[in-house]
Length: 118
Length: 97
Image (tube, rainbow over all chains, first blue to last red; front, side, top):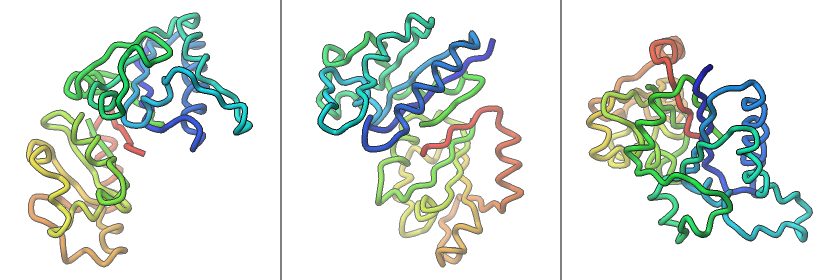
């Protein structure tokens, strides 16, 4: 089993990165790998509660993050600096996460087998 | 671990995020618009954090932007083969898209 880290750094609807990342995460989970998701910079916005996308004609995929534990994807990490810079707290996020400092996140990244960037 | 940044430090905060997470001893390769951070006028963007890193810049991208003569001290230029070597030498890499 390999350690895969998915690094999410983009807000959810302005680009396709966030949705594509989620799809690849689910594929990796299907192959029974050790999957971690990291939310950095604007990637933290992917987890914001209360997303309503009807009027922009795009699917609200944020509930999918709640389904991840059904695929044994339970390692979700948010960088504290990114979260606080956006005025968010853990209570504003749609799923439980582990909040890490930049240094802790950097160390975690360095111990992966594969790092995939979105 | 190798970090690859390709965005101008004046246009986005990508380099800043990379420097926040990079650990001492890691390698940083500046490509495309990130090469401006390798110039004497622009390397303030690398700040203190970069002192603990090995910093490389992709020479063809530096040349393409007319910046080959402006390379700051302490940054190692590499060609495309050197880019491949860096990727091969480091088991992990993160492209800061």
